[in-house]
Image (tube, rainbow, N blue to C red):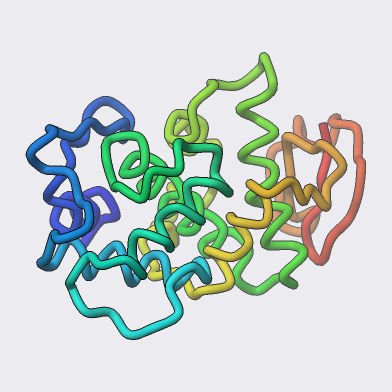
Length: 206
């Protein structure tokens, strides 16, 4: 199952539009008292990020609400403990980034995984790239994992943690907007970029 289909099936309380941007009807918000598979999905997602440290129950109680508040605080959202449109959209974005990190750097060190996530965020800040996470990821030929299908592999918890650390400000690359494996790169253009740092098998550049 593709990521988009997976998210659509799991987060039935959101509507995916455009490049993964989401909106939510007021009657479909997840909040204290909610129950069902959507709540289980959110709890499992928060567990991967280290916010939900108990067993998933499918019931949205105070523990889940507190986990959501921590997530919202760390990711720059209104910390109301409710999964509405903005929070659902961020969940989608983080999940998408984790799939890229896993597809591009699962054999790298943890620092190397954070570095890939940081490049995505650096591109959003650059005038040379789109300003939305999903648009950066789905930009044509931007990431090998999209083209070769590795994007569809299920990420481990380290991929999610790497995305979280990048959002919290860790950028091992020093501002890179490109990375490549010198032994595998076939486009000579990438070798014209200014190298910043080597992390594992990846060269990071701008």
